[in-house]
Image (cartoon, rainbow, N blue to C red; front, top):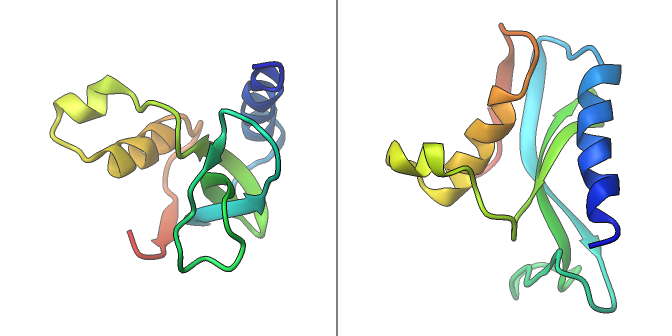
Length: 109
C-alpha cells in the first residue's frame, strides 16, 4: 500500500501537466513484476511477459495520460448503469478528462 499514494499522485499530475491532443488511444499496458504486490495480476497464458502489473491506459502521442489497474474495483456508478467492469473502468477514466472533443482508438475493446 506504500506505492498506492504514488500511483494516485501520478494519475493526478499526468492529467494536470499534459494538454491532451484531439486523438487518443486506449489499450492495456503490462509490466513484468516479480515479488508480492496487490497490483500483480495474471496476464494470461498467451502473453509472453507472464504475470505482472497490468493497467488499462489512455495515451496521447505515446505518453500515458491516465491509467487504471486491472485489479482495482470499478466505480459502482457505471456498474449500476449496466456496464461491464472493463467498460466501467474505461468510462471512469474518460470522465476524469478535463476537456472534451477527443476521438479515441481502442484495441480489442
